[in-house]
Image 1 (cartoon, one colour):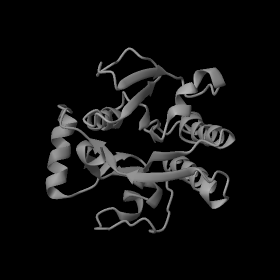
Image 2 (cartoon, helix red, strand yellow):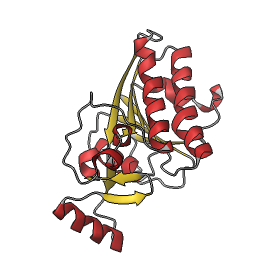
Image 3 (spheres, one colour):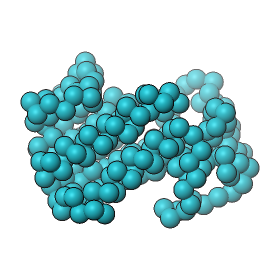
Length: 214
């Protein structure tokens, strides 16, 4: 089976790749903005360059081989242009490309728990968030992630491609043991005493280990 991993150089992408290479039955195509980083050189792993903007047919032949596409590409800052370009427009074009070509593929998309409102609604409260919990977008980031979620869901909802299926993972902010900064030490402390961390004026994070995400 061939898996295309979009955004393999990021924190989450690297961890997912480390899990995938352990299964020798998989063929893995790693896609990034450049191919300078090649963490694995075994024959089952190949590397492709893509700017995630140009959807030219000649540049995307690797997508035709995919049975699973894992999308780890995303922006977290609150620049409206950047969020729109990567979190929404890229996903929209990717789905359109899949539908036009009628690919039989499963898309695994990394969304965010921020679509449920996060700390803005639940600060200093214990809250179990379920898939059907109320959507409470509170920032440009959460709005961009939710819009992408709706675009993906619409393919199945509107029966646009019967060969398409998806998994949307609404994860919290991921951390890794490789993070050695003072922020990481502070993070460990906050996890022990179970409090939210205020990241910006409208975003709170509750952290999850990268191994659990992968």
